[in-house]
Length: 256
Image (cartoon, rainbow, N blue to C red; front, side, top):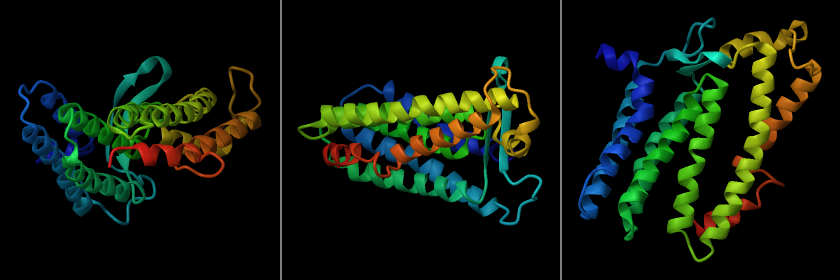
């Protein structure tokens, strides 16, 4: 029990990936094994998230707003770390993701062709979505942001409608365009503050005027670029007008 509590978010996050790897090496063509195996695996993160909800303190310490925090060294050269945590905003998103995933997998039982790769990609997609809500390091956030893009592309391109290739390519190009700006903004912020840690950034960002920027970019420019890069990247992903034109094609052609 102590191990589960100390690594709760990691278990929620990577259980779908572990299940996907197991399914990858499961031989045979019995589609029921892959369908029910993926569904059962997706229920584990949901159960763990319900456990996290029950243990969550609704009135946290203002000095430590994130709970179930896990942190470990990741890429010391750029001061990036494996840093996870949830608060009162991200926890409902994690719960919603872990609830909708098994429902979506259940609805996907109608898929008749290439069931094994479909279920594997769907589980990997869940890990990408969960990582976005849990990451407390901007570089880690970006990794999970992009991880979700790969299975989405293949799910649309392989199991979509008649124009699935066009819809999948349009979705990828739009999202990657926003991601390039997002990566630039993250790099600028990390260099300006000396850390990609969101907690550190939140503490130092209001006083960023007093910080030195080694690359020589004016601090107000850093703030402006970061703001608009995040706005555009999120506007594409949501999507919001005028960055929404990929949505009708993707949703029309995506597997249902």
